[in-house]
Image (cartoon, rainbow, N blue to C red; front, side, top):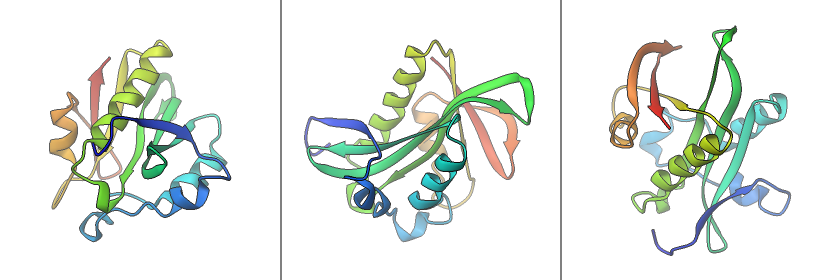
Length: 154
């Protein structure tokens, strides 16, 4: 990371434009929705979505959104928590911000008493699968739509 002070901050009126400006590399746009879509989803799912700006010093370098207390496949007995979206600005990739965000979400979930974190990813060109597997997630064998589901013990 370029500095030693990355942190997650709530998305507010003060950082909204900078958060919405987060844009991944052009070769990744098919893998992750734009931040503005995530914020719209957070608005319509306020009990489940936990959106945060990834900030280093005073610079927004990315966006991450967790899902909290979400029933899997509408099964009320299978409640899950995890990473819904992760967008790191193209110019800030490769500096450890994605790893930081995943670890920060996992720490937040642990603090809430959660024992497993879930994430999904697309397969194919430029997939984030190696990234998530390198952070300790493993494939569950499930699919969410066309995406692979991964889980990590906390």
